[in-house]
Length: 249
Image (cartoon, rainbow, N blue to C red; front, side):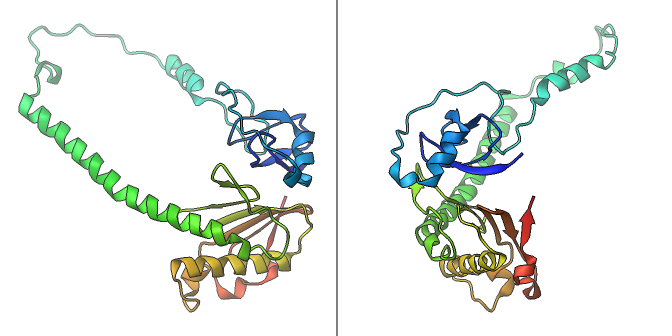
């Protein structure tokens, strides 16, 4: 299986595919089309117009033609396992026995329980939503300046439908960067890009370079290039060398 990069002919998003497969599929808009066409568009996406037309949704279980593994639906297997377990024979209920099901919850208690549940949910949403909004705000700002980090090789930093075409920023603290390029890259270039992204992210989050753990800790860079995949993340200052760059199989 040979990993290749392509561009969706419908929405313009990055597609990681197996060039041995006849078809590929976009994870963002569900467009299925020939793999060769995706690879060809990736060679010069600037000359291609993306229609961004709605695509039919496929049923669960249908193979997706990309490098992300699709796992089988666990529900049928769980049902078969449950059916194989011997069922206990139902015993006749004692008409004089009182069970918890026979005791109705007082209306006041029921209202209190429901009200408490609603309050807890509202509290969770109230805490989570501001954190999400802050993270997305930082991500949008980093997307605007990501070009400052990608100076070692050519990467398409344009966006389509709110997603980067040649890059993706993720992680709870926007600490994970994945990029794709048609060029062949070196480990020294990967290291330099890692340092550049750490600097851009530190500027956005107001992190001092003296704080090594906050400046570099948790950052992971993955580069999909013409000569293969590379990844770098470090835990200490002595690992900040090109020898720490891992080649992906």
